[in-house]
Image (cartoon, rainbow, N blue to C red; front, side, top):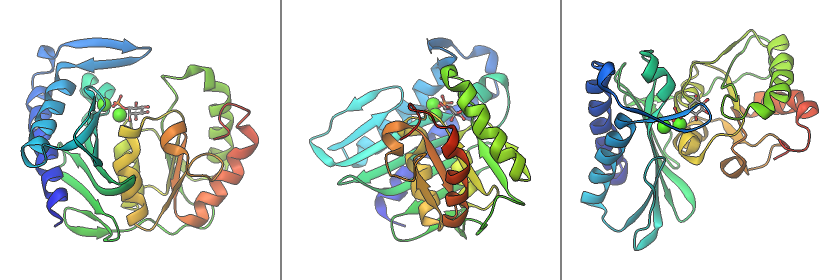
Length: 267
Ligand code: IPD
Ligand code: CA
Ligand code: CA
């Protein structure tokens, strides 16, 4: 295992421990609102601290971008860790056991290592640039669908961006009509990991942040899939509008959502 992946895994496992301990005593978790339908808990913060501490012990000069801590500028900006300590906070708070730790390492602007860890199921998804993607050390691959017929498409509702409700529902309607079924499980990181593992066939969502998708993006690519924005470009990390699937299915998804994008989602 690449030494930096190894450190990322160690960091994800230590955050996982913090999260599981808190999940067993949910009534003790402190919650604060940080925006519309957006919450941060004492657990998000302590899980992130555990990750930052683990990374900094081995790589004190690396830059870290965390959902809760923001930018920790290191003297070596070629190495950037992008962290979501708890992806699926709403599930966590409701006692729904579906959430993950997401950690990516970008080297000179390119995604290089990825870790998505589901501490409830003990499922560790990893990927290294050019080396494929694994679930608990076994190779995973995106399902090679060519059309929407027969597929399960994962998605997230734009609950933090309700101005896009109508456009989103039109996109949903078109895809739902042609696919077998849809899933809204509540963790974008796991949605992408599940695309990589062939558990779902595709994924799309509006308005995600780099820490939601960075690790998942590399995971899908290394599992043989493609990741783009809503017009087939590579602006997904900036726009937050993301589609992931096998190359052929991704083309189909783009073709079907295109008529519903309007001006604001055209990126
Ligand atoms: C959220 C989850 C969810 C997605 C949201 C994300 P958080 O992350 O990934 O599935 O629909 O848009 O913000 O806030 O739980 O880390
Ligand atoms: Ca997230
Ligand atoms: Ca989070």
